[in-house]
Each structure stands twice: as C-alpha cells, then as structure tokens.
Length: 70
Image (cartoon, rainbow, N blue to C red):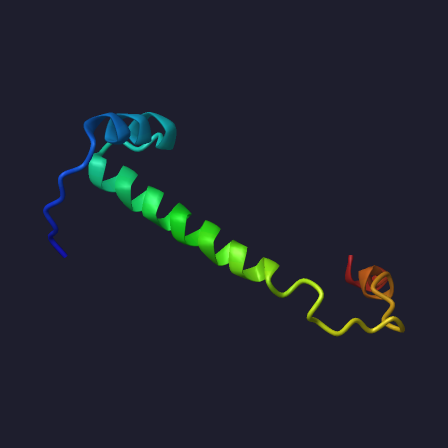
C-alpha cells in the first residue's frame, strides 16, 4: 500500500541507525512491527493474577527426557 507521510528526518535517521536497516521503508516497517509487539506484550500483563494455577502440576516432571530418544 503506497502511503505518503511527512516524517521527522531526525527520527528517520535515528531509526535507520538503530535498526541496521538500509532503507527507510525497511526501517519504518521494522519500527512498526516492534511497536505492535510491545503493545501486545503489555496486554499480556493484564492476565497476571487472573489465570488459575494448578498447585498439583509437576512442571519438573515434563522436563525429563526419555533416555532412549537421545
């Protein structure tokens, strides 16, 4: 989708430097993906304290590897 935007040149330059991307388009797309990921991570925090916890579940038991599969 073609979009014309008037962006702060200093922000674009800093984004290019920090992202390691070689084009403005790649840098902006990367910045947008990271913005979305951070916002989605913030939503996960709202679940803390709301999930049921099974005190009988043995999480260490599921870590054991079957010796024959090595």
